[in-house]
Length: 270
Image 1: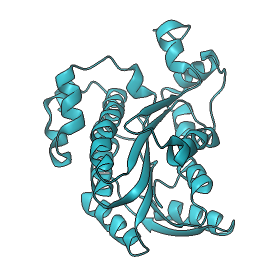
Image 2 (image 1 turned 45 degrees about the horizontal axis):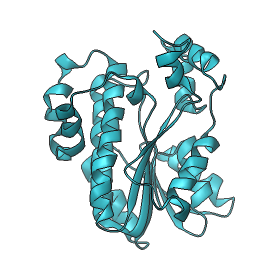
Image 3 (image 1 turned 180 degrees about the horizontal axis):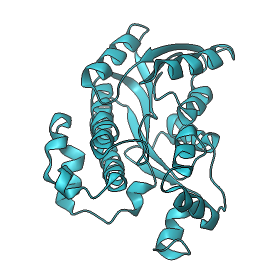
Image 4 (image 1 turned 180 degrees about the vertical axis):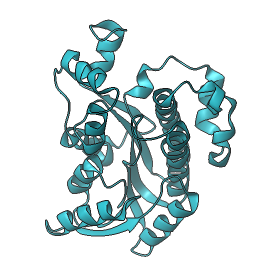
């Protein structure tokens, strides 16, 4: 099992699905991967931590090669990313958009028959205005190494870090659809999950950042009336990764307590 992003969501899914497997956990901060490996190993799992950078193709290939030393890769969980309050436009596009595309592409080349993958996207991609069919197809099908050269992703066409994040997450959703066709040729499946406000260190950065009041208002006025937890995301990942989800591939699951519904049709409407 290959887990990219040593955060609360990645660990929740790994704990749910990773028992009996060798689990490779990669994170840009080696100490994060080591901390989660220690926590899980002390709970009976078999976890190997690795330092890796999702924005680097060579780093992605390196962690895949390391995982293959332990056998075939049967599960992929991509829970890595940076948020609008954490990074620049360039970094968001490089990590969340380009890096995810490369990871799905390269993991798809080596995923075992019957394998499954889940990548964590975001509700943000659902609240952005619809793109043209041509733009959606570009995000879905452009070779990963050419993605950042697309006209719609040039600096003059990206308003701010939130817009960059929304574009990245829309790309994740479309990319999963396109990759599911390729994965399907190997008898494997890939889906995405788009969480709303989930209490994680990344979300806490948002709460104290410049958009903090916006996010607090979001979960106060969504139908659920609260933020979510990493384990609630793992509940859906478990469905998608087990045989009970065998007919689900190329899909995106929005799990946001109804925040997007409220944004379009309720008190969160702009």
